[in-house]
Figure 1 (cartoon, rainbow, N blue to C red):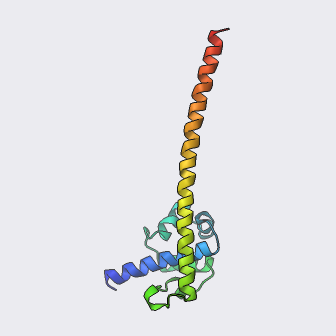
Figure 2 (figure 1 turned 180 degrees about the vertical axis):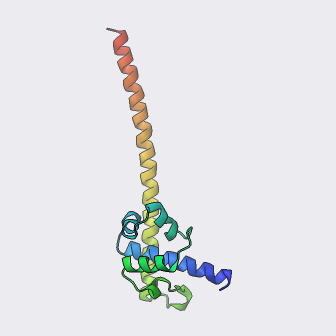
Figure 3 (figure 1 turned 120 degrees about the horizontal axis):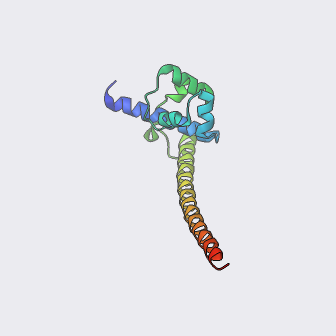
Length: 136
């Protein structure tokens, strides 16, 4: 198998894993626990940073309730009619994934803002306490 085909297969398998996980609305943490690996290890598998051996693929397929052949199937959007159920599902999941990523970014920004406001409040509380002690 040449590098291009291998890359396409790996990309497709990783996308299939993610699509199926999102279909069940499972977190990476949940699937990782089912596989007996860390969340970061599963994230690396799902994002294509880790090569997956056959036994791990079989284990993932079992957790995701699909046959191995379905997990490694290469999805080709050009081979499907535009409004096929597969295209509709993949588009819907891609849209949801984009929405989730946007919400995660908003959560990150809000946490940073909350952290900054807490630091300001702590600073003000300390100075108010110091001023109260001085004027007693």
